[in-house]
Image (cartoon, rainbow, N blue to C red):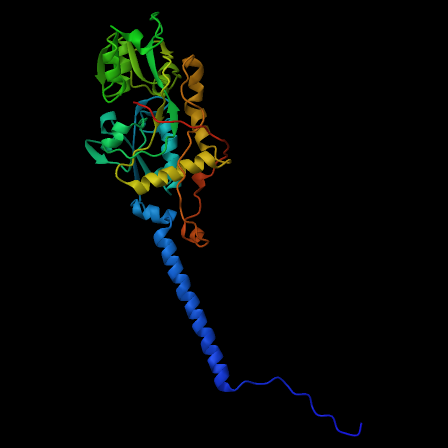
Length: 362
């Protein structure tokens, strides 16, 4: 080589002003992206569905220490209070299931007795005074009339039908409500069965509590009791040791009167629509989660065992009615904000369930 080779040229180093401008442009781009992200999040938050935590705040449950639930106390199998003050029954199990999904352990739930005529107003008895409960889970059938009067119902959680209860020694058949013409019948004062019975010629008397009607039947003051099969079946299938609010019990018979309509029980949350949505969210998860057996366990424990004594009447449908799907927003960070599942919410589960539609009721 006759000539010296020139050194290879290195990468060009931009002037300091160019470097500064590029960094400024990158920072500006990042700022624009952050602002746009915040704006999009605000739009989605304002226009999209609420989070579960939003619903808890709207329902007034965030930070609440105790949940008040109005329940029946004289309906064996549905809701009954024992001499020690403890409650048991299908409604009780459903109430505690919903409460658990709302974040309330059993020790943070107060169950208060409520009469039928007070269920719309959510006025339950607390000793010698009345208080407004957060929700009512008290064999409360969903009807349009009750909605007009101020009830706000959740999706249904049980499907049953009307039936007739008589003494087993009464050999007069009851195939329909028409067979009660001229007979003395007791039903609840708020029951939609009352006007139908009067129109059919029955001699109707009303009571505030179904146990009072059953006591009248035992004492010979009436010939039959008319209300929902799920309520009456508990009096037919009496188990030794069950707490009873009636005396002089006698063998009973439940009649299938061939009514096509369904009685669908719902939870009344009054004007608290956010709480209604949370209840529906709990029922929807119960109805659709294949590992959730809480509803089935409650049915088996409280109602299924009553069926053999109640034949040919079906006590209640052994599938949870279809529940309303509640749209909630679930961001990746939402799992940080929500508390982990409490131990009392974990249980073995299963099951697809059936549908129903509202009719009239207890």
